[in-house]
Figure 1: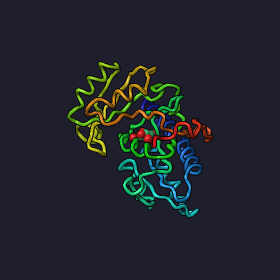
Figure 2: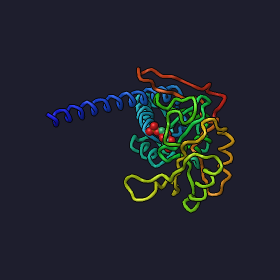
Figure 3: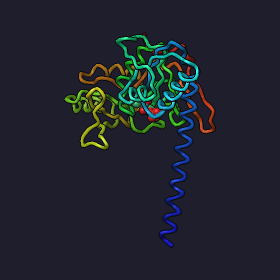
Figure 4: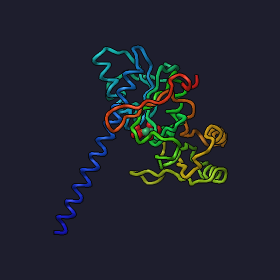
Length: 263
Ligand SMILES: O=C(CO)[C@H](O)[C@H](O)COP(=O)(O)O
């Protein structure tokens, strides 16, 4: 009797979590397809972001290359993005060969009402910011859980900060002293010790920050700390965000031209 009730409960929980993940995946796919269809043209150099939503964008790029004979060259923002480009038989390039990127399509952990982003949940913030900063347009694709008024409203894992390993303790102390909140070294899951980025660095996650902070000022202050390589704050970089909603429709934010990435 007890075991039957437990089994029933477990099956219901499993069904609910599957339904939730289907909803999220459909939302991610809808956003990714819309962004690729509206922003990628033939002969474009395309920056390929990182994360689970970008997988749908790469699938769509490959589909358009096959069906429309679209000609594109792709610049990865991480090891994961490079593998995706190779697996989908897209043309791989880099900033040495193609220093100007026509459009960069990437995910985000959170987008606030001013189009300030938290990125780096997957630890790829440095290369993502480099590629985005060399793109004429940064287009964000995300599901509805990423659409916030203020940073920290929905995303509770914090602002990622990439640091040189020998400097991680003093940097953690400085951030806590200056701005408060909590800061932790990101630990690996299938490896003992910390996460090591594609660039050989560590990642700190800064949580419980003041949500009314002046992010532009804080970002510049942080970047002055020796050993701090990059922050996951993307400010005035994204031109547009596509959010896939639960009902399969898409919400778009951002004008498209005011805040395109810095050239
Ligand atoms: O910044 C990132 C990786 O560094 C990702 O774009 C961000 O974490 C969103 O990922 P997902 O599409 O899986 O939600």
